[in-house]
Length: 412
Image (cartoon, rainbow, N blue to C red):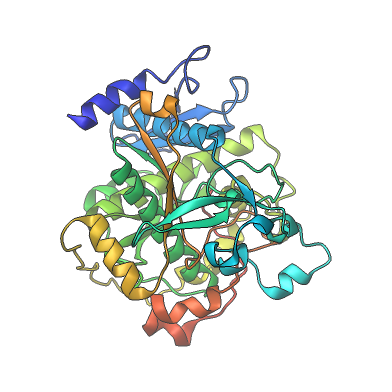
């Protein structure tokens, strides 16, 4: 009942004049795209539809449309919510978790004369309260880690861990799963680990094979996670040009994670074939020029000669069994227990606005100082503390680490 009511209310959020988000647009597919996958996008502005503020991908039109609306609502809420703030200097040290504790930049990066994020670490940076996942204790944390607003011009707001759902508890779980999947991806990527390939579903293989495409399904599940993490990497040609992408997902079951990663990969492949038609990417020729998530999504399509060199693709050639883990009990309780055992701190903040709740959704932001984070700017990669994370995530892979792997990740 909650899900149905939420879906009905979400449709009421749409409108160009009085709605909360712009009208979702269904992406047109070419003959080089998987026709069983539906793509929707909510444009950032009406006259540049390729500049998407949110997207949704699914097997049905309804699910893809609602996914795009939901993502647009969560980002609107994050941009509009008003939270009490106080400057770092006005917050007792024992009551806050500073940016220095997060897996962001190394000491050497911060000492560089051109380092652009000093504002995040100064005494005037605004802080807001987030709550500990274990005991709900309040902690003051840098405001850019909680909302997409950036009044102090830190350059560090992120949507990672931002999620919307019919209930706050479900939104919290969704945000946490996103943090885990990105922690797994970036730990694997930055350490240059070869992938652990798993057999993909026959339906997915057929869908891509018809288009002369190819992909590999990888198990990225870290040792601490009670939930499996799947990644899909590969490409599909369009008019003779290969479009390369990556999709990653963390879900309660391996089948659900693998399917979601496959859908996300399809979304990236579609984007890689469209973006270059509207935006000039001719100068996107080396790593240093990758300065946005759109650049990450386009880099290997623009430079296909780099794709075979990716460490994750240099696996042993065999197929491994998928992870057999199954969360015990209620998923959020299982996650709380596993994270406590691993010593990984997680905090959250409910940032639901009146508009969001009237659209049938709660919005929650989840954050962790102890997880690797995805980044957009290759000149300033978030490599701080990540070198020491490998033993806790993939203890059997330490000897093959090549940290830091500076080839751009393909996740847009």
